[in-house]
Length: 240
Image (tube, rainbow, N blue to C red; front, side, top):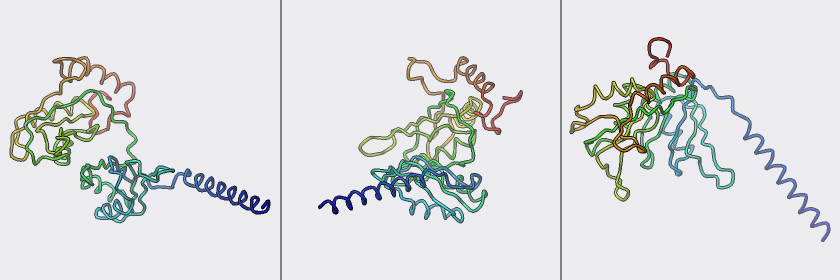
């Protein structure tokens, strides 16, 4: 009996040792080509490594796919990374895969090497009178043309049916991009209906919209203090 208990204890220690070794190995960062890698976010729990591989290989040869998983439940964490053979393939994947829906959720795909922080400065737009056929990808593809978008566009949808309620929100990293979007898109047709585009109302201030002089001043000051928060393509004259 004592021998059996000793063996069981030894097996338990061995199992613990293997688990710790595995955890240590998993903690070691992979040598990933950052320029050829993309970050994939807003993933449904049912998305697997194999599904991401099959999807991303449409953009170019894939080297590796990694979806971090919970150590206990083994469920995905809602994001992952895909490494391509070349930076050109990664750039192409961002263009064609961003906002593609998997299990009803639009993916967010962007370059992993882009370490610049997109600050939420308050440049939030309200897009109204949306055609029912307009989805998140069309909205992103349309409004991202004016500048970096901080978050996935949010279309208000009915909780039970999932149908669009006819309006959405888009947040930019700069007020210049938001101003350009308003000037170009307000009253323009998106699908089969002319959309209304304006600054969204603030949640904590009745009747006050985003885009105020105070918000713009704070955003300008934040840029001066942290220039890396603004992508080069949206930098204003004077070193902002």
